[in-house]
Image 1 (cartoon, rainbow, N blue to C red):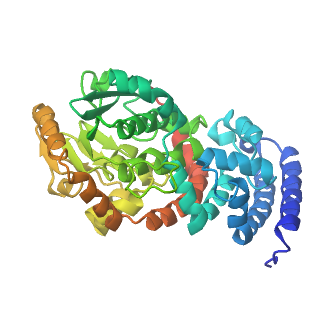
Image 2: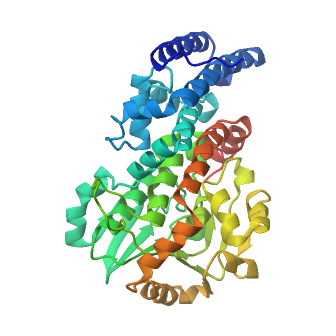
Image 3: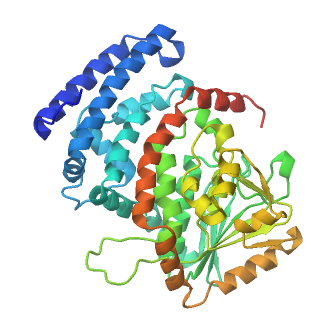
Length: 431
């Protein structure tokens, strides 16, 4: 039975009361991994009651909640800042930082799934044109870390981080993913370093084109070879170190979106377009999962003839970011379903690969092909034309609507029993 809104003040108090009742019930139960079937059902019922209340509350008040948190949209808050503010300003709406710290100290199998409540909240925010657009704009702003590092990068043209090396050379920002311990499998460190590097490349006026390539690996199976990316780090998921706000949504709304649309700023009277630049990707060996997702936002992709591409979402049990939005548009609906639902692997040398990459060359010719691609995208009119192409191909509100549903869908999948079982098995494998 639907409960009609009684007013923001009264309903926020009632939401806090229902959430507190749920917390008392959960506190009386063992941790999730140790619960009996009956206790699991009891916890699920309590969560359902609270989540239905949260959903109804946000259906009625999402814009008012967002305006209160952002001072009438005068404060640009990133996703993590927004949910933290919501936890304190609207008790019971989303988990508190303390609850999340306790949750993330446990393996995924022993977590309560509190990020699902963040997913409910962020779905409502992104569904709103007014609030969702404001949040997306906030996520397109340069990070404080990048702004702090910018003077030194302008001076030296080099950035070294644990996951990324960025070097400016002849007007090209050469971004090399260098997590050779895990074949560039993405975790929160990788996302933070990637966004910082993308910001610096976009902020530096001496950069005309960006290039992303995997570095040379020391992993025993690929020693001495470049690898683009092995996708999301499944061991990090199993250990509870992949979060909704710090990885899954930050990645999509942060550096991937910046690759497409560039940077926003705090100038309300800006009349000129935002700062953006063309990007080239060079795929050596493989682009799996998140690595393959990355390719869908580049202006030009060069692949070695012995490389392959895959999006093993069905195997991993999660949603492959915004690939469900982009892959069908780029490669066609049939191929998108074969890759995402069926786990089809695309070899760079086969004809269908040309739907996903622009050039396929022998491995020994990659360097030359990459340099030629970068030179082609350095033209004066490239930026204006890519902006217009992106405007037509991926309208902002289309991406916003997709990511609204993704926020909850991915939160549910990351805590689903089948995913916990799958990543748990992966975590037990030797490196």
